[in-house]
Amino acid sequence: MFRSLLIANRGEIARRIGAVARSMGLRTIAVYSDADAQAPFVREADQAVRLGPPPPKDSYLDVQALLRAAKETGAEAVHPGYGFVSENAEFAQACTEAGIVFVGPPPASMARMKDKAQARALAAGAGVPVVPGSDGVVADLRGASEAAERIGFPVLVKAAGGGGGIGMAVAGSQAELEKAFRACADRARSAFGRDAVYLERYFPAPRHIEVQILGDTHGTLLQVLERECSIQRRHQKVVEEAGSPLFLDGRNAGLLERMSQAALAAARAFGYANAGTVEFLVADGEFFFIEMNARLQVEHPVTELTTGVDLIGWQLRIAAGERLTPKQQDIHRRGHALEFRIYAEDPVRFLPSPGPLNVFRPPEGDGIRVDAGYAEGGVVTPYYDPLLAKLIVSGKSREEAIQRAEGALERFEIQGLKNNIPLHLRIVRDRAFQDGALDTHFLEHHAKP
Amino acid sequence: MDVPAHITGTVWKVEVSVGQVVTAGEVLVILESMKMEMPVEAPEAGTVKEIRCQPSQAVNEGDVLVVLAP
Image (tube, rainbow over all chains, first blue to last red; front, side):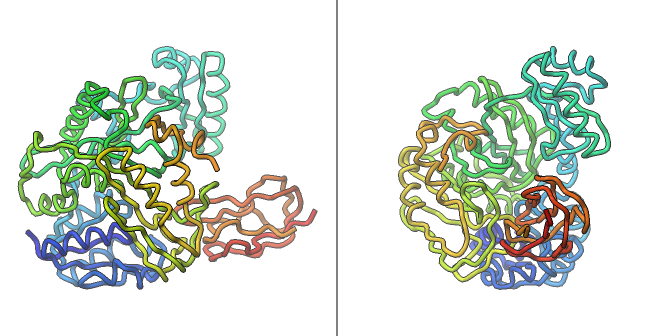
């Protein structure tokens, strides 16, 4: 095992990785921007190096500054956390070339996952179901019409040149397809300068369910069970849980088994090692590969708490070349866990709300864990994502976890900025949530003020 | 009419210039905060009389970004 670790991240995840690493006897090195000089993750580290001014491109995304900090401090390994440089294959490669261990998958594996079309083709080649769609771009309305007939309605018409949902249009029938095709092509031309569009099957109310993967560099690959992350706003997760309510009490066991095997097959196709996650859309008793995330997920604690597998600890041991000791048959779920992302944002319109944390008092108690990036008296700046803390609540059953969560959310005191605790309270009190009737459009229809 | 920032963040882009005629709902300025781009739109039609911000400037919620004349 290496003896020192540079953590190329900030906030709650830098703090959490630091705590795990120090518990394993490692010397931890924090890096920070001027906006984070007083943050808990900097204070708690054994050593801290300033990267630069607050904007991410001048600090946490600055590959040269990160490499310099690692060399100056003699860091033997770098953990990138999530976001920032975590999925940057060039950074991983540069670390490797500098003789520094990158805690993550092999750079070649990261490169295979980066391009969505390539990742989709690799997964499909490994027998993993992907969302049915046109083979690439459709040339004209006739091509679109033929593709839609094959895929089945409703279809989603998407711009090939861009992302972020710009131009996407849904068509429920051949009659609607012409309008959707023209609208999307026009929008694509004005936004991206090319009017190329492609088609995908549209799911009106899918669930987002993902499978945790853990692999070592000696060929052992485990699936560490599923998580459900259907409650989202602007395609970002808000509440996650393990296990998925879809599979509680042994329901839909065949589907879960097929999905878990597909996740392993996808990870194998990518040549994966370390911790990663295979994401699926689940609808009408079927599942479809979305992508594989080559990093630790924000929501990893719900897996840790219900399986007892120390994901960050294993990431470090695997990066050091150790073999996974748990076997697939040792991985079982005990109880249920929920994670609530506490965001600095208005709880109705979800607008960002940076500001001072005049009061910040997380709840304590049985089954309650809070991974916070900030402390009382700190300031939340507009430079980074709005995640203040993760409230993670576990219980013997989903019902117990929900009940505990309601109390914990009521006791969580934050003053000085707007935050989404009121939204979380509406969610845990919502009948559909309690019934586990989730889909990715949940917040459009439920938990309204 | 004063058009204020509806969030605290930094100015990413100014989409209009002084003297320009704008319609209601037209994007005047794009702010960036917490990894999100948030457009600031004209509440009603008018002419841009004054621009009180520039790219990469930090602004607070309520700061006037653009002044419109009817």
